[in-house]
Amino acid sequence: MAKGEYIVSLDIGTSKVRAIIGEQTGNSINVIGVGSVDSEGIRHGAIVDIDLTVESIRQAVDQAERMVGIHIGSAYVGISGNHIQLQGSHGVVAVSSPDREIGEEDIERVLQQARVVAIPPEREIIDVVAKEFIVDGLHGIMDPRGMLGVRLEVEAYLITGSRTAIHNVVRCVEKADIEVANLVLAPMAASTVALTPDDRKLGVALVDIGAGATSVSVFENNVLVGTSIIPMGGDYVTHDIAIGLRTQTAAAEQVKLRHGCAFVDAASENERFQVPRIGSNHEVEFSQVDLSMIIEPRMQEILGLVRKEIERMGYLHDLASGYVLHGGVVSMQGVGELAEMELQAPVRIAIPDFIGVRDPSFVNGVGTLAYAVRANARNTHAEPTSYARPVRTGGGFLARLRDWFRDFV
Image: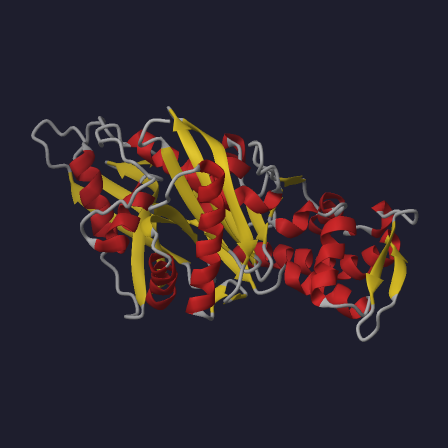
């Protein structure tokens, strides 16, 4: 394989840390290596122990390296959490060229103008993303390059994040001897593999039900218009199973993955399994129906909170494409049926179409790879970069992150 054809993503989640290596071929990518280990040091999506998180990252990277036979020096890292916020903004500039043709410089200046807002000192403006451009009063323009005009405006939103949360993620990755090539906002990354162009245009809710939290993101008119975090996820289901079956958490997690069904009506009485009871050497037999009666109420609660969050955001009746679900817990049987009933809308389970990662839990990691390829394809004047070695650019990781998000404009 020629040098420079590799790209690496890191998905640091509450349940798993995943390192995925892709081979870039033109504007597409093939997944050729995966490292997945149990996550330590992370609770409800937030880093609570630096050393344990660093060790989990190292183990995941080592697995991926051994599968492909290369040394990973840098990676694109997904970032999410309840510290990410969107804030509306507006910018306006005069077109600078003598012939009044709008160019890259004018777009850059109007986006920079939209950044001029007051924010709390503990927050960092990651980037400004355009919802639409306005040329001499004409609305609805997505790309004004090459158009003629005197006045260029932008309706945009600012992506802001907690400085502490961002720095902790970067610190963990760098302590694991991995250079942060760039940070990628997880909902944007996931949308590249989970959503169709019609989804993004007509209106859709992208719901990531992770282990420690559930992320709800709304896309409309090809723009991320809202994002929110619900502090409840698949770990709550595991906890309910452990209590209901009186077994250890590790055994409850295995039962959930192997026999779990979120919808009682879809469960089978003939599918039976045994679990060890806490405090004894005896195993007790249960059916999938027994297990489903524990799982369904918690999944109903999570989905109900998702619907309330969409209603709070004001998009309950504006999602023509319904809901797209991903995350480890949605791989259970019956999730789609239960979700359609609870959300009262069309529901689809997103699964990456790549060998070795055809599972809803890999959407964020694979999406980060696809997002990286897309961003690099847009930058036609940039020199090819080898993603299997450290990528160092000036201005620090926040400056790189601003450049990174600008590719979505």
